[in-house]
Length: 160
Picture 1 (cartoon, rainbow, N blue to C red):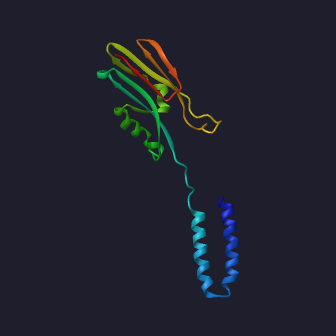
Picture 2: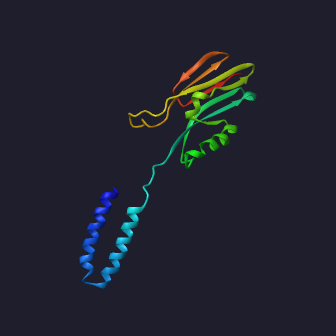
Picture 3: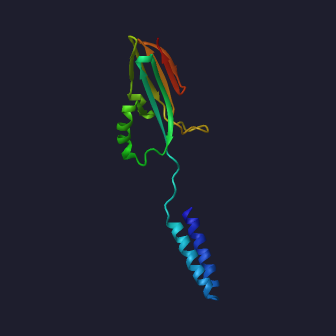
Protein backbone atom coordinates (compact mmCIF):
# COMPACT_ATOMS: atom_id res chain seq x y z
CA UNK A 1 0.00 0.00 0.00
CA UNK A 2 2.78 2.41 0.88
CA UNK A 3 4.64 1.59 -2.36
CA UNK A 4 1.52 2.40 -4.41
CA UNK A 5 1.08 5.60 -2.41
CA UNK A 6 4.69 6.62 -3.11
CA UNK A 7 4.24 5.94 -6.85
CA UNK A 8 1.15 8.15 -6.85
CA UNK A 9 3.08 10.79 -4.91
CA UNK A 10 5.85 10.82 -7.54
CA UNK A 11 3.35 10.96 -10.40
CA UNK A 12 1.36 13.82 -8.85
CA UNK A 13 4.57 15.64 -8.01
CA UNK A 14 5.74 15.40 -11.63
CA UNK A 15 2.40 16.70 -12.94
CA UNK A 16 2.28 19.55 -10.43
CA UNK A 17 5.87 20.60 -11.11
CA UNK A 18 5.23 20.94 -14.81
CA UNK A 19 2.04 22.90 -14.09
CA UNK A 20 3.68 24.99 -11.33
CA UNK A 21 6.24 26.36 -13.72
CA UNK A 22 3.48 28.33 -15.39
CA UNK A 23 1.68 29.97 -12.43
CA UNK A 24 2.79 30.90 -8.87
CA UNK A 25 -0.63 29.95 -7.38
CA UNK A 26 -0.10 26.36 -8.45
CA UNK A 27 3.26 26.28 -6.67
CA UNK A 28 1.61 26.76 -3.27
CA UNK A 29 -1.05 24.15 -4.14
CA UNK A 30 1.76 21.85 -5.21
CA UNK A 31 3.52 22.29 -1.82
CA UNK A 32 0.32 21.65 0.11
CA UNK A 33 -0.51 18.50 -1.86
CA UNK A 34 3.05 17.17 -1.62
CA UNK A 35 3.14 17.77 2.14
CA UNK A 36 -0.22 16.06 2.64
CA UNK A 37 0.83 13.06 0.56
CA UNK A 38 4.16 12.79 2.36
CA UNK A 39 2.45 12.83 5.76
CA UNK A 40 0.04 10.16 4.52
CA UNK A 41 2.91 7.98 3.36
CA UNK A 42 4.71 8.30 6.69
CA UNK A 43 1.66 7.65 8.85
CA UNK A 44 1.37 4.39 10.75
CA UNK A 45 -1.16 1.81 9.64
CA UNK A 46 -4.44 1.59 11.52
CA UNK A 47 -5.21 -1.47 13.62
CA UNK A 48 -8.40 -3.47 13.85
CA UNK A 49 -10.40 -3.63 17.05
CA UNK A 50 -9.09 -6.11 19.60
CA UNK A 51 -11.64 -8.69 20.67
CA UNK A 52 -11.22 -10.08 24.21
CA UNK A 53 -13.34 -12.96 25.47
CA UNK A 54 -14.03 -13.44 29.18
CA UNK A 55 -15.81 -15.82 31.53
CA UNK A 56 -17.84 -14.59 34.51
CA UNK A 57 -18.50 -16.90 37.46
CA UNK A 58 -21.17 -16.10 40.05
CA UNK A 59 -21.84 -18.12 43.19
CA UNK A 60 -24.63 -16.94 45.51
CA UNK A 61 -25.18 -19.69 48.13
CA UNK A 62 -27.89 -17.67 49.92
CA UNK A 63 -30.27 -18.18 47.02
CA UNK A 64 -28.81 -21.48 45.74
CA UNK A 65 -27.50 -19.91 42.52
CA UNK A 66 -24.39 -20.65 40.42
CA UNK A 67 -23.70 -19.23 36.99
CA UNK A 68 -20.81 -19.39 34.55
CA UNK A 69 -21.08 -17.45 31.29
CA UNK A 70 -18.85 -16.14 28.53
CA UNK A 71 -18.94 -12.64 27.11
CA UNK A 72 -16.73 -10.43 24.97
CA UNK A 73 -15.54 -6.84 25.01
CA UNK A 74 -13.58 -4.82 22.48
CA UNK A 75 -10.42 -2.77 23.12
CA UNK A 76 -10.28 -3.20 26.91
CA UNK A 77 -6.51 -3.66 26.94
CA UNK A 78 -4.32 -1.37 24.91
CA UNK A 79 -1.24 -3.55 24.92
CA UNK A 80 -0.23 -7.02 26.19
CA UNK A 81 1.91 -5.96 29.20
CA UNK A 82 -1.31 -4.78 30.87
CA UNK A 83 -2.96 -8.22 30.72
CA UNK A 84 -1.65 -9.23 34.17
CA UNK A 85 -2.92 -5.98 35.69
CA UNK A 86 -6.31 -6.58 34.12
CA UNK A 87 -6.41 -10.16 35.44
CA UNK A 88 -5.75 -8.94 39.00
CA UNK A 89 -8.43 -6.25 38.73
CA UNK A 90 -11.12 -8.60 37.36
CA UNK A 91 -10.54 -11.63 39.61
CA UNK A 92 -12.31 -10.18 42.71
CA UNK A 93 -15.39 -9.71 40.51
CA UNK A 94 -15.36 -13.32 39.33
CA UNK A 95 -14.25 -12.42 35.80
CA UNK A 96 -11.41 -14.24 34.04
CA UNK A 97 -9.93 -14.32 30.54
CA UNK A 98 -11.47 -17.18 28.59
CA UNK A 99 -8.00 -18.34 27.51
CA UNK A 100 -7.19 -18.99 31.20
CA UNK A 101 -10.09 -21.43 31.51
CA UNK A 102 -7.86 -24.51 31.15
CA UNK A 103 -6.06 -23.61 34.38
CA UNK A 104 -9.13 -22.61 36.41
CA UNK A 105 -11.63 -24.74 38.33
CA UNK A 106 -14.38 -22.89 40.14
CA UNK A 107 -15.89 -24.16 43.39
CA UNK A 108 -19.14 -23.23 45.06
CA UNK A 109 -20.87 -24.82 48.06
CA UNK A 110 -24.65 -24.54 48.01
CA UNK A 111 -26.92 -26.21 50.61
CA UNK A 112 -24.26 -28.79 51.43
CA UNK A 113 -23.61 -29.64 47.76
CA UNK A 114 -20.23 -28.97 46.17
CA UNK A 115 -20.37 -27.49 42.69
CA UNK A 116 -17.24 -27.64 40.57
CA UNK A 117 -17.12 -25.96 37.19
CA UNK A 118 -14.53 -25.36 34.51
CA UNK A 119 -13.94 -25.80 30.86
CA UNK A 120 -11.54 -26.29 28.03
CA UNK A 121 -10.35 -23.30 26.06
CA UNK A 122 -10.25 -24.12 22.35
CA UNK A 123 -8.88 -20.92 20.87
CA UNK A 124 -9.82 -19.62 17.47
CA UNK A 125 -10.20 -21.83 14.43
CA UNK A 126 -8.92 -20.85 11.03
CA UNK A 127 -12.09 -21.70 9.10
CA UNK A 128 -15.62 -20.35 8.85
CA UNK A 129 -16.91 -16.80 9.13
CA UNK A 130 -16.21 -16.62 12.88
CA UNK A 131 -13.16 -18.85 12.82
CA UNK A 132 -10.89 -16.44 14.64
CA UNK A 133 -13.24 -16.12 17.62
CA UNK A 134 -12.19 -17.85 20.81
CA UNK A 135 -14.34 -20.72 21.97
CA UNK A 136 -14.57 -23.04 24.98
CA UNK A 137 -16.51 -25.99 26.26
CA UNK A 138 -17.94 -25.65 29.76
CA UNK A 139 -18.63 -28.37 32.34
CA UNK A 140 -20.30 -28.54 35.74
CA UNK A 141 -20.34 -31.24 38.41
CA UNK A 142 -22.48 -31.48 41.53
CA UNK A 143 -21.01 -33.62 44.29
CA UNK A 144 -18.60 -35.22 41.82
CA UNK A 145 -21.22 -36.19 39.19
CA UNK A 146 -20.89 -34.41 35.87
CA UNK A 147 -24.27 -32.93 35.06
CA UNK A 148 -23.43 -30.55 32.22
CA UNK A 149 -20.84 -30.50 29.46
CA UNK A 150 -21.59 -28.07 26.68
CA UNK A 151 -20.20 -25.54 24.24
CA UNK A 152 -22.98 -23.04 24.89
CA UNK A 153 -22.05 -19.70 26.36
CA UNK A 154 -23.74 -20.12 29.74
CA UNK A 155 -24.20 -22.75 32.44
CA UNK A 156 -26.63 -22.06 35.29
CA UNK A 157 -27.45 -24.23 38.30
CA UNK A 158 -29.95 -23.61 41.01
CA UNK A 159 -30.09 -25.93 43.99
CA UNK A 160 -32.94 -25.61 46.44
